Amino acid sequence: MAGALQGVGAVVTGGGHGIGAALARRLVAEGARVVVNDLDAEAAWRVAHEVGGTAVPGNCASEDGVRSLLAHATQALGRVDLYMANAGLDHVQGEPVDWLETSDAAWSTLQEVNVMAHVRAARALVPEWLETGGGRFVVTASAAGLLTMLGAAPYSVTKHAAVGFAEWLSATYGHRGIAVQAICPQGVQTRMLEEAGPLKELLSADSVLSPDDVAQAWVESLADDRFLVLPHPEVADYYRARAGDTDRWLAGMRRIQAGLDALEDR
Ligand SMILES: NC(=O)c1ccc[n+]([C@@H]2O[C@H](COP(=O)([O-])OP(=O)(O)OC[C@H]3O[C@@H](n4cnc5c(N)ncnc54)[C@H](O)[C@@H]3O)[C@@H](O)[C@H]2O)c1
Image (cartoon, rainbow, N blue to C red; front, side, top):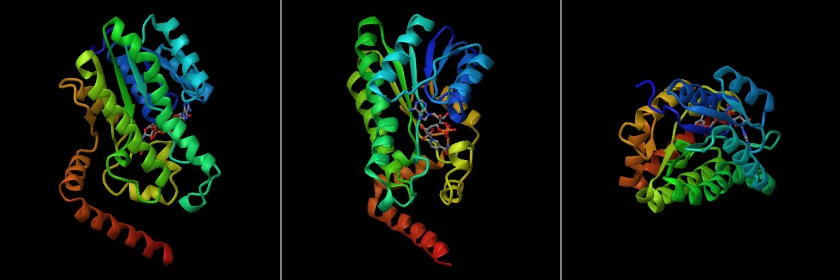
């Protein structure tokens, strides 16, 4: 399906590493022109150079950061047709993993990057897209945003909000030419997974995919324009189970948590 995105002007946030870098490579392979954003400037430049795109390093979450990113992206691309809100955080470096010890400041940082980054970008793009023929807004959320992630309250809560916002955008603007998608993977072999500490094993319980697999699943989803992109097909089963009998599903989650507690007590 090469060339599915011929000529499309795309921005990828958090494109310097992991899933974002794979999305940037795949976008270019499909014919898109790409702006690579990342807080890690060197990584943004490296990936942009590799794919023949434009690096716009910086914070994709703050009000100023979003404004600057969109201004530079518009300059480079002419028009932003596709915005891949991919950057995300599962914890703040140096903060304790235990949610009881996680500071309000760390909760706010996750809220900024995992939710408000998307809100601010969409707030700038949607009015323009409504006037000029539409666009596509893709959020890399997580299976944690559909189910939950044991041991990671701020991540689970903010990823639920990310899915909720994407769903709301789709419901509100889908009939007016704005396509919205939420990519919800489980374990993906990236720096985030490597640095997940004790949660790495839990995230790897089912299959661990490569970032390229995630990019592939997203490109395949374009054929029937699905809102939910589930690179791990088992997530669809868990999501159905949760909706069908939430208490039964929660009982299963408690059993997994009890197993983790027992391992920790050893
Ligand atoms: N790896 C997994 O197992 C997994 C599973 C489900 C969802 N996800 C989601 O996929 C997305 C990409 O994560 P990844 O696994 O590739 O992790 P990663 O850590 O390899 O990449 C994330 C990138 O985002 C950048 N970033 C963070 N905050 C930023 C900001 N404010 N502005 C600009 N860039 C910023 C980082 O510098 C980094 O390059 C995240 O939203 C993550 O929550 C990852």
